[in-house]
Length: 135
Ligand code: CMP
Image 1 (cartoon, helix red, strand yellow):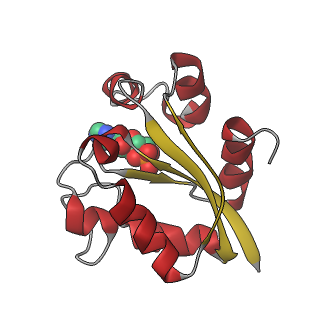
Image 2 (cartoon, rainbow, N blue to C red):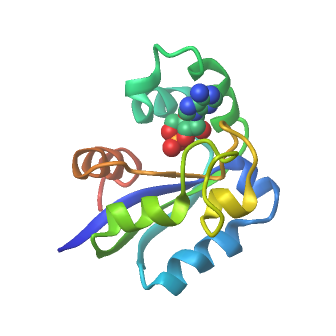
């Protein structure tokens, strides 16, 4: 089935000039960009986006990082896009992410891991609504 998923190309990727590289990997896979915006996350959006993490010890530095500079938010669509994108992105801890994945090839941190991607149909719907209320 065709699905939509929410992707954030995080501030570390923007800072390192990797936006084109990351978008290119998604496009070459055959996914479609349905919407895209360059914007800075504020505290309120961070708390909403990461609602399931706000009580975790890693959240304060994560919030600091994610709100520190602009990022690129996009909706990708395609056949089973939610799982396909998670596979392309690789494991959360970039130090352990498999070679060939975005994080495995390009990052070396558990926090500054270049990309966020929705992890389920429910979170995709919720996150798309937060970032693109009209989409
Ligand atoms: P993301 O896919 O955006 O979802 C939650 C984010 O929290 C994750 O990517 C990482 O950036 C960050 N994160 C998750 N676990 C840890 C951790 N143990 N230490 C630091 N950052 C983490």
